[in-house]
Length: 278
Ligand code: PAF
Image (tube, rainbow, N blue to C red; front, top):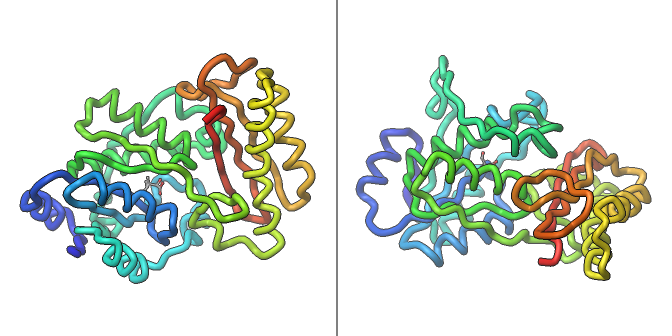
């Protein structure tokens, strides 16, 4: 496995690479959710490339950035064992010049949900993902469905900027009790870990009400709130029943819709999402 640290190294490796490339962008501290992306990228392309970069531009607070879990040497071993052909692990100054002043911003879709709670977050995500796409020029790039808004924002960026990369969504990987895998789960203390399953249970409650014929979005949101309200360690940021494409909040569900939520459990902010009827 090639380990690439600088932009000239990536460009040279890309020029030498033959066949199709499937890219898995990550911020490291990889878990089975990332490895599902790697597995799909390896299966559907001649080569799988991954990136590990904790992108300060997408973090609101300095503290969240500095406490984000990191273990690059373990990540590299796991990627190598999984058959990843090359990993790009840049330092921050390799990615952003000191006077960097160019950003990619998807309007509208980024104002709501995570965008409302974390101003500037998606501008950081789309800027770094666009740079990674420019550098690696992947045929396909793999993103998890748990980060449902991120997936839609990146799909929109690719469409609007005519980027020649197919964005491939991959199903959320969950613990046996339903908790969606996330690098941030490592911060959960034992009681918080138990309470965190309420995010999945809340989504399931909405899914079950929907399957039983409920189409009033307010009632579906209330079903999620009811589950979360029973957990004193969980502070809800938002619960949402939104149009699957625009992510605008719905009054009634008449087509493809996304149930999503964000909550702080102890001091760890978690998100999860489920497509209704899926
Ligand atoms: O989902 C993530 O881990 C990050 O937002 C991404 C896509 C790697 C960009 O930094």
